[in-house]
Length: 158
Length: 332
Ligand SMILES: NC(=O)c1ccc[n+]([C@@H]2O[C@H](COP(=O)([O-])OP(=O)(O)OC[C@H]3O[C@@H](n4cnc5c(N)ncnc54)[C@H](OP(=O)(O)O)[C@@H]3O)[C@@H](O)[C@H]2O)c1
Image (cartoon, rainbow over all chains, first blue to last red):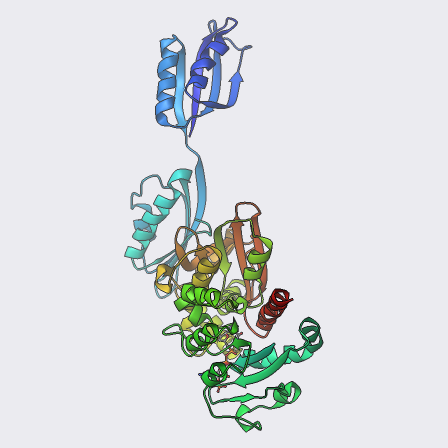
């Protein structure tokens, strides 16, 4: 899992190496690093990193170790990769019920729908979901849609 | 080798035609190759010196053929009158009959079996494969799934070191025809179905196709044969295409997708309508079938071809030739 970190390092030689040590020690794999030495703010240089850790625990341990070294942490958060998915819903249902169903981690981006003379709804839904939650969200969504007697058509491979 | 064709309907007849056209190829592989028997539901004809294929092709009624015996095809198999049978009787997924009895009997007598009949394999895949192994004979079934597409031979011969991780496929030509017409002509499901029925692509009772039963049978055979599973038809979650509206397809189209009936073998087995990006290799139209596999070494591969019709004879004939070659290799 990826984490984004911004540290404020004193503008002195050797500071970056010192900050990287706890990351390596806790098994972090650095994916990107931006060290803006030409932009010191009041004697501090911001360093932005994206690091891959095996667990939340090793990330938390790294933060702790950095703090023990007296390093200022400006920002630290998990980078959540999101997938945008297109889905079709068909049947006698109210698409608002799907949008308002409060399915966790599902973010509705867009919806387009038509209603036939018989009242049957066809809708295209665009959602954004954290990559790791796709299966769970689709499962939940399917349950909500089927409960209303309608059909959910997800893309292949999902 | 002496071949008997059990089931002399659409495929049986077309197969015999192909055998006639390819007879010199077959004789080059096995100089003793003969078609000795042909059976339908009313009886069979048999000649130990080989039937007159040319004459059989043009005769419309087997029962009027000289030497016709009003006896069951079971007798033809039982009496050791052949070395290989092609089982092409109607598919029955309730009890597999009459095909299951024909295949069991043949294999237990050491007779090789080539079949296009899904029923027996859907119901008793493992049993029949181990029966074939025990009696040291072949049971080949390329024609049962996706017609002329050589999926089983390809995997068996050309992907021997690969592990298949997932499989997706358009496994039913009738539903693909209906969904393609809805996509291109912007017509409703009902009209597209009616058109398919008028063209003879869909049956009068279309439920076997449109409710996804046929595709689910193929998912079962693929999962058992290619991915080492031991699954039955009830293990396949199934949704057909009756509920698909023309509006749903139009909405999909606007986002560069189409809707296809997809058989999926993944953690779960499923047959259901799915969105397929229009630039995906699986996105084929009309009565075409397509199978997309993901493997550990080759990664992704897609095969496209005719899923039914007389093209299926290609798969059956290839299976026959495989048996001829392998058996000759073994005896030389
Ligand atoms: N057609 C295709 O495109 C296609 C493609 C792939 C797989 N398949 C499968 O291949 C098989 C054959 O298909 P088809 O289209 O050729 O079917 P078909 O035209 O209905 O022919 C079936 C044949 O089986 C005979 N038969 C029925 N019961 C029998 C019995 N107890 N003993 C001996 N023969 C018996 C029938 O005899 P009568 O002539 O006396 O009725 C008929 O000749 C089916 O299982 C089908 O699902 C078909």
